[in-house]
Length: 549
Image (cartoon, rainbow, N blue to C red; front, side, top):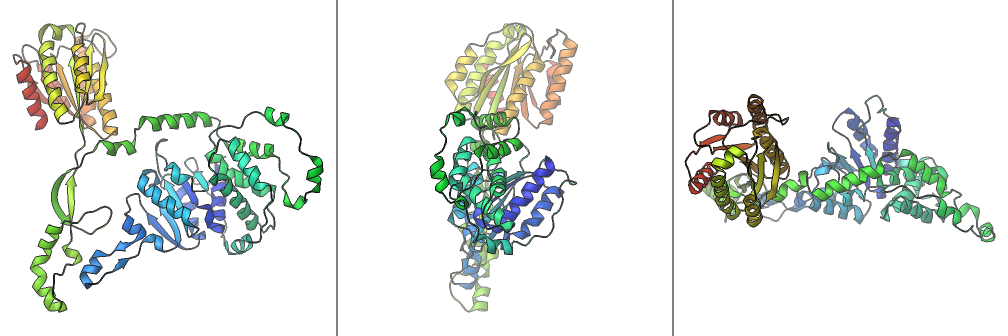
């Protein structure tokens, strides 16, 4: 099966070399010898090859003002973009392509046959995939993740020149376009680009073999290459086809047999179904679920604010950089006399070495994960003050638009009372309803807070765990009432928090400082604040000062 996947990928490249209108190929594979062997065959594609990356600027793609040359010569100099020259675009790290870049590349592919696109998808996770709108414009897709080096056999040298010339002479049966559209619909493919790609692929395959007319073998191979990776459902039963009326034999006999293709739909359906994974529907459902959650690398940027300005640096325009005009003029000023003498030109002369670009320090939104001890010992002593301090901290967090999560632990387990939110009213309501009583499962509370912090990190937030407890842990992770094991579990979980690089703050709310909590803070690499007699106001002020440091 793996070797068949490799041969189909090689064949797809050959067809793409024959007909540029097929758009390109989405190639999913990690960087390595297997991918290198396939990309080495890109020399079959006529024209220049341009490697681009997801952060490429519009100026690099479409061209624009060459500021450095314009300033040096004193005349307008136009910079040519990569798209001004026909050829093959090789998009690296395609799974990180932004919506804006995907739209621009899609526009280029829709414009004509001057460019092909090879999208190198290096995503390690299932939800890291190429932008679907861009993938729709590529006829072929290949997943080489399961291909070994021994299966990646290099083919013989291939010259598409003869097939390109012969492509114009290949005839297509009249009913083929209708049949391909029907087959695509049965696999849940709603884009009309798919049957058009399949029609072109069948014609290119016929030209590859020197045929004058597209036959059944060409159509079957084209459907495998174009429809298999686009399928979103399995074809239904054959009951409808059995109930369908038979075509008029008289009318079919009058048709010219050379203008039609005698290929039943059943054969194409079975051929495509044979290479589809058994869990196709499960994969599609899982992918939709992941997309609905909005997690992953795409959601990380949504939590970031505009940063504060930093000193500018030397650089050049491009890739979204913004010029710092004042700093640029300041850098060019000392050289004006020398430059005027050298060039004989009056006026301000700015060179490329003078250009300074702006820099910003971006800070992601902060998440405060309040982990509150609601056990019996804490409830009898300081739980009321802890609640009051958290309410005051919540008001400050709301003013800064920080996110807040609330985790409580008591009895034998911990629970998330409130996922990350910016709602002050909702958080206060959950906090007021926080009950007290039971054992102190400190390790379970740390585990639950760690899970919330890791999930927030994936969404672009910067989490800080704030633990409020009297430190009398007496319930282990397995729910057993063992003080020694409970303390050991808490230390072990604290080590995991520190290994993740997550900031923490330990507030000792007991009547006297607890040495075990001080040791826990050292394991966490956190600030330890013993507050045996502080009221809610002092407690909140101390916590706020520690968080702002």
